[in-house]
Amino acid sequence: MSATVGADDIEEFAARLRTLKDRSGLSYGTLAKRLHMSTSTLHRYCNGTAVPPEYAPVERLARACRATPDELVDLHRHWILADTARRRRTKETTDPYVPVEPTAETAPETTPAPPTAPAPEPTTPTWAKQPATPTTPAAPNAPTETPDTLEGPPPSRKLPRKATLIAAAALVTALTAAALVANRPNNASPDEKAAGLTTPTIAAPSATPSPTPSPSTSPTPSASPSTTAPSASAPEAAPQPTGAPLTVRVSPYVYESPCSQQFLVDSEPAQMGPPAPEPDAPRWAAANGAVSANQQMIGLTLQGTGQETVVLESLNVRILTKHTPLAWNVYAMGSGCGGNVETKSFAVDLDQGSPAVTVKGGQRDFPYKVSESDPEVFYINATTSAHDVRWDLTLNWSSGARTGTVHIDNKGTPFRTSADDGRDIWDYPLGGNEWIRTPRNEGQTP
Image (cartoon, rainbow, N blue to C red; front, side, top):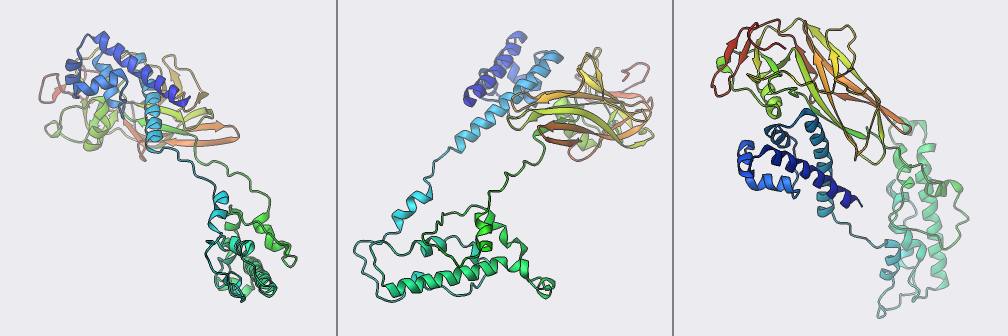
């Protein structure tokens, strides 16, 4: 069933790519050149035989085909589902399930001795010769010796009565000594505890299943209840899952339009390279020490990690630092663009005393629900006109009886957005090779 669902997700994603490509009127070769990829790769993406491992080439394709903002959101969601199906299919292909026969059924086949083996001498058998006192604390947890001791010699061998009695006595002595070692931490003297001689973790392994079963074939009346309780007690409760049952992918720089993003950089134009498209914005900003100017839109892709539904209760903003605006140069990532297209998103006014996440452009408010097969994509548009602000987000979630909070930032560092203090803007015209100063009253306004 899962394989069919995964194939459907990949086919639906490929169908949307084909729709965009056909609508653009471009051939595979022309479109591939614009996207800087091979024609065969683009063809595999569009017919569903391959899924891009990253969303960046998908977004470039969509923008080259003039996709609308709603189509971009829908395409992103279907890429997430197709990528999940691709990873699941890869895992099933590389790690096939191989059934393993239970060891309890095969063990008796290896214990009988060959028919030609000589009969043992009428002396104490080697399997009954065990030391009266174990030499290490791990003796009570040695599961490999218990089946040999309790099962005795193979049925084809007949031991003298005296040897059997000696073996039984040695067995009782060994079990008694093992019980004393297992219970020693609870009865250790204060001097031993002070010297670090107690081993409180020795009882922990006994609660786990033994690799091989060790049913007793004879009564052991001398064994006290304390010796059997650690290994034969009631089953432990199933461990509770830990960690958040969802993943969050963060896109720190989402362009609301090709020309909407501006950065503050403490460098002169002669030292700056060309502007970056949205997929390359994180690397460009990191290389230049850039800070978003006036507004910063981030994208959040939230997806459950299992079949259970995760309820997203609320999204909150935290202000970490707030200072005066940066006195740096302003660089625009696009030139000659039209007006912005309103996008469904959440808005954050960083200049407020207690900023809150509010709905914008028809976005529905919290709560939301996500699962592995039903992700969500959120856009957060943070703005400031008077401060240099470091901030992050917290997401409160619940799943059944479990609740928790996920901290969201830019790979371990806070988001940072600063007002540009009305400075002139540096543009990089299409087809140009240098930055051109544009006075504020003639250029773009944030």
